[in-house]
Structure formats: structure tokens, C-alpha cells
Length: 179
Image: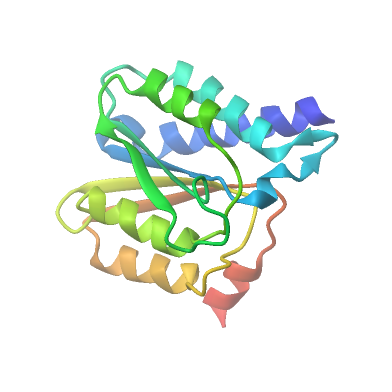
């Protein structure tokens, strides 16, 4: 079952990166490096599944695609401000992204709303087509509202897309948007 979970995560990430015009725009991949990524799926830590999925996908991305890498929760325990753009969007960044993900510590909180907003702003989403791919296992733990942010980014962005590769997430955000 662990192999299946890893394969599914890699397939979803690859699909999100290719189906939504990944090659035609700049992308920032955000990795949830919070402490909850130590939890296991079929005996394997989620962080390892995320790293493997990321490596697999990056091997199939053309070298001229502009990919950036951001993480949160990787430097400080308990901080909602621990968000960092580690690799700016650039062509040929796959190996730098893999190396950064492989050396990352997983220990902090989950400020996913602030991270997605920072990534969108780094991509100049109000001026250019932009895609953010968020790899996470949890819900916001820093008071942000990811559903409201999604709506704002869609309304104010030129052509903004946010894709979420989730581990064990619920439909709470979907229900909130429909209410």
C-alpha cells in the first residue's frame, strides 16, 4: 500500500504540473515541512513520500521550465513566519530543488495561506500567468484562511492556478467555499 500512496502522489503532482500549462508559465512548488510530515502512511513518513514524489516529477520536467521552490516550517519550531523561497523560479532548477528538499528539516507549523500568498506575489500573479503547487498534509495552523485567499488570488490574478497535493486532507475547504 505504501508504494501505491507514493505512486498516486507522484502521479497527481505530475498531472497538476502538466495539465495546467506548467511549461507555459512560472511555477513555485511549496513543500510543507511542518512537524506533522513525520506522521506515517503505511509505515513510511509522509516527508519521505513527498520527497520521492517531488524527485520523480522533477525528472520529467523539461529543463527550460522556470520552477521555484519554497518551504515552510523547516527552520523553526512553532513559528508562523518560517516561510522561505529557497530556489527562485528559473530554468534548470530541478537538481537544486531536489537537493533542498532532501536536506530539509521538518519541524514547524503550517502557515500555508501565507506561503501561497508569498509564492503568488513572487510570481507577480497580478501581471503574469502563475501556478503554485502546494504539497501538504495538513490544514492551516497559523490563523490564515486558504479558501478566502484562493478566491482573492483567482479574482485579482491574471491567470492564477493553485494545485494542492494533499496527504490525508478532508473536504473542509470545499464545504467552506460552497457555504
